[in-house]
Image 1 (cartoon, rainbow, N blue to C red):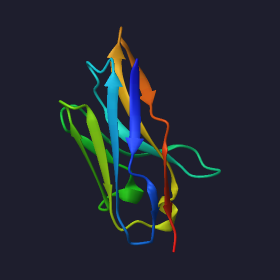
Image 2: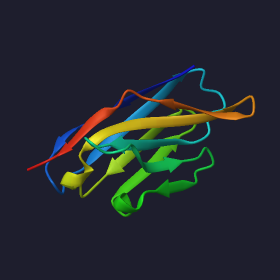
Image 3: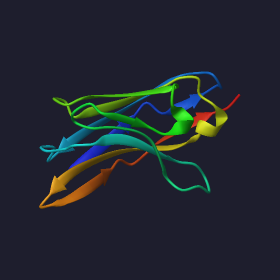
Image 4: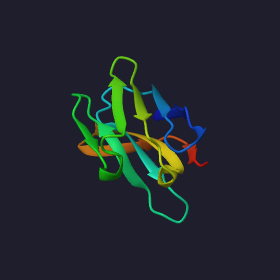
Length: 119
């Protein structure tokens, strides 16, 4: 099993910045993609950004140019730096990690951390 623990959420004014962290623990060998999803009230969970173990990144259009994802493979930790935050960025942010297991990619989720952008 893989456990993901997020930190760094909170409340910030529009235009502000936050840095989210997610550390994996447990059976962490072989973890490939790590990333962040978010879910706003009444909306579906959506991808924010992801990064593979090889360093390839993918960003959702709404956050391109404002967010940077990075990771430390040795520590199996991923960060999301969010700048120029907007009220529409308000959501619960979930850390995600996946790993091939017996030919199937299995996904793991953190418990989520709240990000609120409001004046």
